[in-house]
Image 1 (cartoon, rainbow, N blue to C red):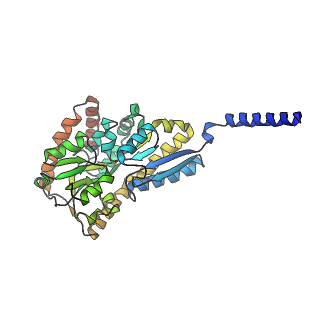
Image 2 (image 1 turned 45 degrees about the horizontal axis):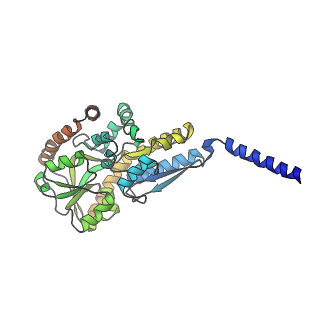
Image 3 (image 1 turned 120 degrees about the vertical axis):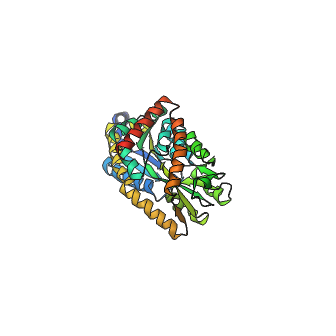
Length: 336
């Protein structure tokens, strides 16, 4: 009996030692991907990234996609990525600015001429290397500095001229100065709200309009609330995809490499696929009785000439952000 017990004890000790000696990357890592929208370019990006990572990681990483604010409203999600309770999230750029002011550069009116122009700028190697340093001291890193869409103003009252903006209470995609001060210059009364809170505010008309993109307007059936949707000239909606740095490093070099490579490969979706999807969403908006408005050339110039100096002043107040802004301006000229 003593011999049997001794053998069993030795077997248990040996098994424990084997488990303790198992490599860290043998465990399965969970990678939660959060976004406030669904059935759009970010959702497509996440699906492609998930497929690539899971295929190459061979069961070592399980990727879970949570669209439509399933993990909470944007302020809580952004905080979750910084704390590491959420591994990856896409958010309107304004909400990342609360963690890292350098993100503000992506919201500068007059910087990007179009989605395709912006895609070229953000894929310039020097620009990518610069953006990779944003938020490093806050525990985050940009996986994809994505330009989601032209910035669209959905409003109860049609906006066709700069003067039409005066006095309108408009939801912004964040409360940072770069989101609110340029709009104030054209007479807007800005209201910062997460996307999930904008729908009821539009329904009960506590706000007159909101800035966003065609895709979520279609996904959440905003055409039942308001019909006019106006392009804000030379202004794009940035929605960076951001990862918790500590979690990324915890994967070990091999799995980290897979995540980086597959996330970069999936970025192709922000090119032609996204441009075609934006067009299809605008057509869907029209089919539901909505109107897509483009300001005249003179009005567009008036808007850009009014808001760009405000943005430049804001971004030049911090030397590091000013350096980022000037680098992107130079890249913008390079790819025009």
